[in-house]
Image (tube, rainbow, N blue to C red; front, side):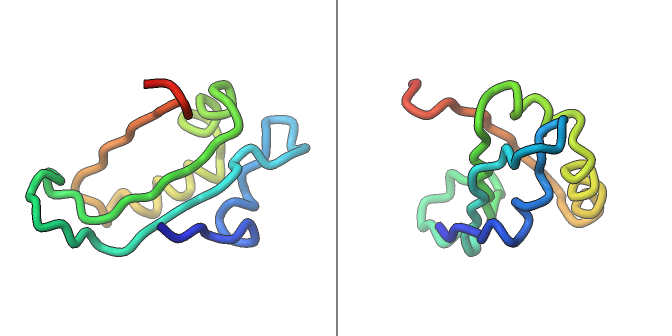
Length: 90
C-alpha cells in the first residue's frame, strides 16, 4: 500500500478550529489482483488514518474538504464500503 504525501490530499483536513491536521495518513493501492473472488466487486481501497474518533466523526459528516471529495467521486463510483476500525481493537 502506498502512502500519499502530506503535501497531497491530507493537507486540507484541519480540525474544526483550523489549527492542526487530523488526518495522520492517507494510503492507496493499485487495482485488486486477488485470485480469490471474495472482494464483492471492490477493485480499489483507500485507507485514511485519523487521529481519534471525534475527528473521524467530524471527517465523516462535516468536513468541507471531505464533502468536496465525496461530491467529485460520487458520479464515478458504483459501490462504496466504509469500515471504521480502532487500531489494536479486535
